[in-house]
Figure (cartoon, rainbow, N blue to C red):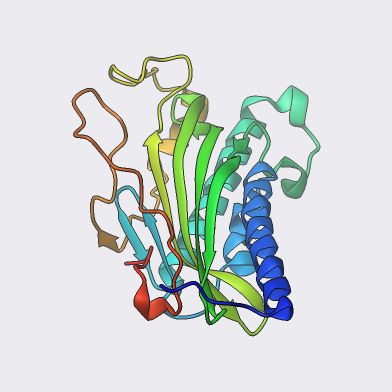
Length: 243
């Protein structure tokens, strides 16, 4: 792509767009920290029919599937909160459902080392962020702390109400319990009767199964980082982070 010359007004608009994309990813991080996963789709995603979310095991393709993914995160938090309240009644008695939501759980997903490219026509953009996080998952064995290291790869689209996430890949290299060795089988614990109901919670699988990435294990083949965005004029001229 030949270097395009922008007017000062265009440069200002592009700077504001870049700031907005950085803010969206920062707000996404805050949403996880505040246990507001169930609001992520409505707040930050485009309502186009062709949105998609890729994870290691495949694609949530289409707005119903993407929304269903975030709704399921919210439902899992609600169930875990209920079980924690029952397990620790002396500490949590008298709290409302709203006050209990997210108790005993935390998800820290800080992002950094980003690369952003905005299309020459200003209608789309691409960005990639490194993720170095940890989170407390509530399992049938009780609370478990895990590493969460990987990438967010995002195509943005300019909708009538501003920049929104269009396609996203949330790919992990490390998703192992903290305190364990990444090069051996992950640690396991016996089932805790207080949290046995978590075993029956079924998280919706991607509606387009695929192997997009594998978590690290000894002998994993060399795995390249996701491709970085490059300058482009229109979306038709570049690759997609979508399906």
